[in-house]
Image (cartoon, rainbow over all chains, first blue to last red; front, side, top):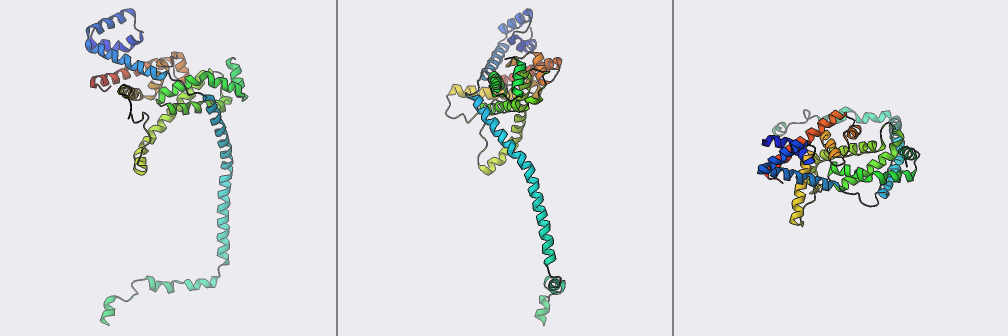
Amino acid sequence: MKCWKCFRDLTAYLEGTLGPEAQAGVERHLDECKECRGFAEFLRDNYFLAAEEYRVEPAPFFFTRVKARLESVTATTANSSWRVLLQPAFFSLLLLLGIYSGIRLGSTLNPGSRDRLTAERFVPWINELETEPIENFLMN
Amino acid sequence: MTEEEIIRGLQSGDEKVFREVVDRYQTQVFRTCMGMLHHREDAEDIAQEVFVEVYRSVKNFRTDSKLSTWIYRIAINKSLNHLRKRSRSRWLQPFEMLFNGKSEESVYGSGESMPHAALEKKQRMQKLHAAIDALPERQKTVFLLNKFEELSYQEIAEVTGQTISSVESLLHRAKVNLQKKLWNCYKKECL
């Protein structure tokens, strides 16, 4: 048997699912080939290791923890269903309040007082073109 | 107690029946989660979530499949979702390290103050998990259910919602891929 054939059948050989003839063939090859034998042992060890890890048990009082979790989830769901209803209502109310207070504030402003905030008063301070250049100032 | 009685009891919210279900399936569910996640705390957390989900959605359970199959399906879906979340959160780890100066503790711990043999075993386990985790999701699921849960092809097909022939094919590919990965490791003496 060639090494590649042994490699192909190795997992099935380790699981014992090959036919009797093929099983004996792989076994003969493993007796002769050191590298394949080494890999077969390595593979068996790893499968054994994985199976060992798998034989774990959950910690004691598992049901108690599940029950506690179920209760907390139920409480959270109840809270969140209220939140689902209350949150949009609260924000809508806040928005309406903002709009209403804006309108009220706008209507209470005296229209005459706006004259004081006209552009003529502010533009000279903002517009740099109208300010006197330093050269002119020094020349005069 | 027959399965029908259990389902009826669960649907009516009977706590005794729920306890019976948890006692009956906790080990299987925990082992399935453990096989997928390789982390005890995470596996226990997800196993708890599975039973909470069972309790909450048993009203929608259709009796055309077995209860155990349905529970397995929930366990696998929850574990896969957790794995996806975990891999997404790995992207954020460098930022966490940057801001907090520490990262989320490794699944395997630091390995300090561990006897040599235990440390070696732990390292082998890490490599083995890496090889199993590198399998595509469906291959990994089928492999774990067959190899460790010892479910039949028919049962795996019911749990994963695939045909028996595709389960056979996935399992074969999983074994070949795993063997190849372990061969590479063996050649490089990484274990």
